[in-house]
Image 1: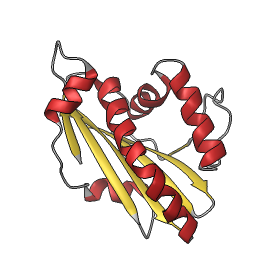
Image 2: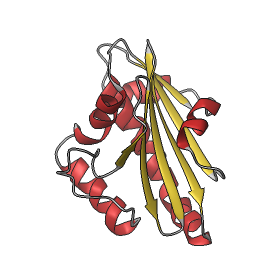
Image 3: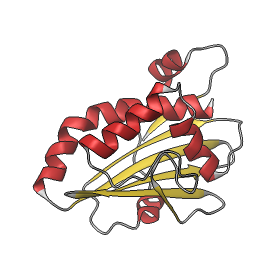
Length: 166
């Protein structure tokens, strides 16, 4: 898990560059995923004074960035990764992701692709928010695809969470 701290007066890039600290993925997030054989996981945490509902956090992460980014993410996930996403306009979902088990402190977004099941877990704490991705690989090509896309995903996920929370 990487921990970001919201620092007033710094750009998002500087907050990320100067305050990232590697940490372990929480067992709680793994349990929220509902996946039995997690093959990949990463997590990011931002300390913040802002208050969110879990679904609000998910919408801030994916739907609030500059206009081309949500459309680009949806295109890449649905056409390249082949996640089973619906239209971005569907307000019962978050950028096409199914919303599973929303609770007072966590939300799980789910989607499946050939070769893998993906869960994104947003957890809201009193003074922080965290975002965890868990992937259960079903076939070798799911692992191969994510080996290529993983570094981009980790960079973008940390940036989006820091931007949404600060």
